Image (cartoon, rainbow, N blue to C red; front, side, top):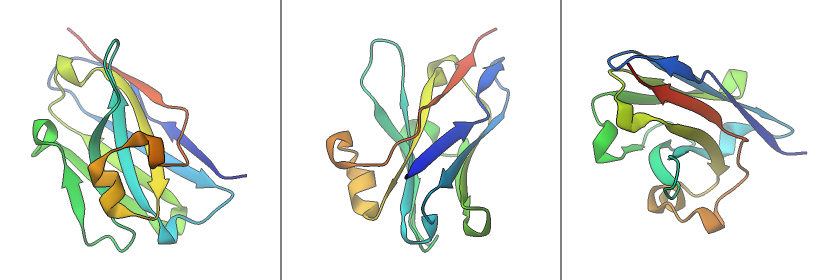
Length: 126
């Protein structure tokens, strides 16, 4: 069974940092691009960042550039999202998704992407 499990969410003050993890089981991430999406209350799920299977291409939405860093460790079958200088508008449930098509992740049409994790909640508040 293909499964992704996110972890690392929590509550932090503005300016704080969190590192999210996305662990895969039942399949190897080696040939998959990985994406991080988020969904705030009352809003649609949006793409945040993604990384190609070969680790040579990354994408960040403008609102997180310079603050978030995506990475992967294929030996651990895990991807990460390091989030620094967090802002209240970063509050959301964060999901990871694996897809063989990096461009599809960048395009961000969630109808055609998968598998997805269950999400991890990030709350940024003073």
